[in-house]
Length: 73
Ligand SMILES: [Zn+2]
Image 1: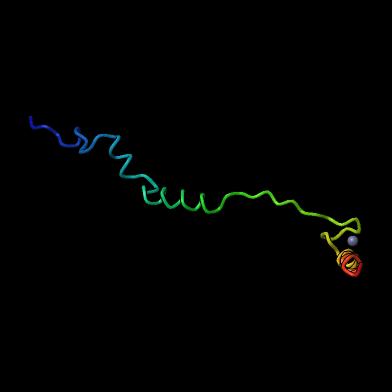
Image 2: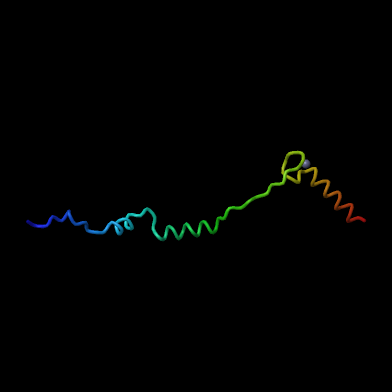
């Protein structure tokens, strides 16, 4: 009785798994580059007492007046 080929897998399961991976080594390398180039950043936003981003136009003007006054002294 001859051996039946389908009883002998052509490749071990480990190799098969590697061959059918969804991503290649290159993909992983690219992903590392992307993650390195795009680190998360914590952004602190300053809010003015009047509710808009600080400095608001009023504050800008007030600071301008102050700096001008100091420069004139
Ligand atoms: Zn304001």
